[in-house]
Image 1 (cartoon, rainbow, N blue to C red):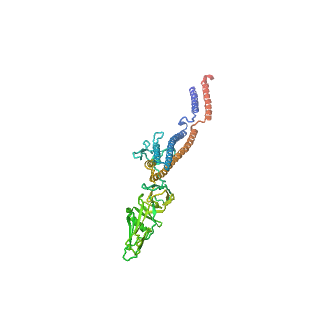
Image 2 (image 1 turned 45 degrees about the horizontal axis):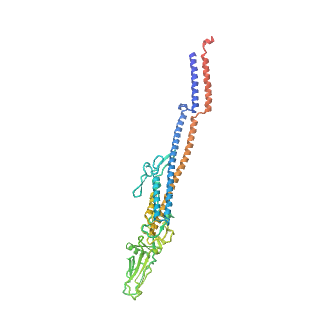
Image 3 (image 1 turned 120 degrees about the vertical axis):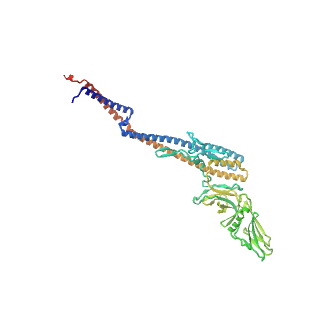
Length: 521
């Protein structure tokens, strides 16, 4: 094979260029710290790095989302703390207003304080976050959620939406709570039922909010606890006619209305249930309702404040000298010879000794002797009354309904503003309203505590997820480093070898430059 001088020069130059290229690449690797300078260096590794970069970018986005979510929940938690403080302050004011030492002027001052607290509460309900979005408007972030109407009521312009952000591959977290959930979805009363006095009550009875003692037995009906007198009635009417031509007649009048009449020719009703039926057939005229329970007949006004019940038993058709005699249902002994043709009994507020519980259909559920603050139990629930109710006074028990916390505060303030507490009726009205208001405030505070606890739990969950994200990010970076980062010890060694190879190639080329055929001649 013929080797020319030109060929030898070319090979020498190529060797130098190749060595320089390798050395330059190694030098660039050392300066960047990267093993792969282009995908061509390691196509499979480059593909893995691309996937890892995507995972890394996604994880970093999750971390940014988590930071935003944590900030917003922190702002919500601050607002909730403010709401809780307002409610606690109103609770203290309500207790203060229920004190017997207060007068109309001091209660009006307390009402003013509560109205100020209501304004502060509305302002917090319309709070904005750092992005200038309303926090409690659901999805309607740019709409003010709560508007106060001219009549004092409130309109909610938000919705029930709850915003979520992605803070992990499989983890979303709620960053808000709707105004409905926090401010409006609050069951009044004790959360199952609510107890309130009839506005026409005239006595001093104050009702307890009550509780559920057997949920399985509670049926959610409407009930009335009304106060009555045990009439002392027996179930038998006795007519003794000692004459031969008499038509002995018994008549029962209640409040001037004849409710029952019996004679020798008409067999009398001789059961308490039958007597109660007769009385109740005329209750619209007499204003008196009769109830039978446990072998007792109770009398009560059909409406509170109706006053005493006047009951008259009378006899007619008797003959003097025949010793005609009637023993009435209510114990009156009517005798023609002694001239007793009628007897009247009055049941007034001083004779209120019993309570009767009826359902929405006026069916009796239970009855008993009234004792102040002694439990009245029926249908799986119980309550009690303190004070002295008047005849016919009643308390209504209805299933709990949703009541926003603004209305709770407004109701308390309104009673303090409009009720004259200088008399027994007004004082009792205030006591009942304050007791009911305290129960509703406690329910509202419980709701705030619930939402606040959930917000705190979400913040803790975010912290945990951020730690997981940080660990995952570190794992990705370590894996990525193993694929693309340079082994400096190996690279420096390789650099030295390549540098030596370049120098050898350069020296060889110089020597080859001096070689030709004439040097051997």
